[in-house]
Length: 262
Image (cartoon, rainbow, N blue to C red; front, side, top):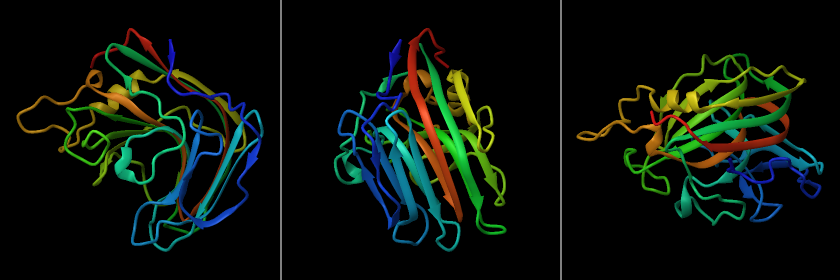
């Protein structure tokens, strides 16, 4: 068994950022051996500031909060993160933990998570969205050219545990940066502590097999899960004209031998 991330039990020094208004940043309050926290508004003609965020550690779990109310359908996020899909091309060097990329050749991937989604508010009648999810970022030399640390366009799987929207359903999509595949896990119940402990290898296979026209390069085979590696792990709150908060604990990704090569 190989636990890919560290400090999944969040036994960290107590910390509270307080409410941060109109900002975007990547912070590492516990240093290079632990979690980072990132927040921003990443879509639209804005200055990339999130309306408000807060994160804190109690010493045994962590809390994150985000709110975004910029006009239009601008996507905001607040997330705990380890790993780095983008490399030095994405700005300042990362000061949090960046594990070695996790090979998926003949491997199974297990997810463990405890979570309470305690806030999910839509703030407009028809342009609001909230999602709480585990994001897993995959890449490899067989992916199409792009802007990640390998010079490729990565695949990100949104394993979502909570979703509320008046903007429509969640669907796979490709943008300039990545291929995005949303896949539902056991749904969380607002305000209740719930646990997930599951083999997510089938979901990763499903994501790689999603029919994106741009995923297969001319003259080459379609990428398979065995050809890819895990480069980044997030717990994320996504918001469009919305407000969200969650507390998480026991957040671990385990990579074990004996998986599928599909």
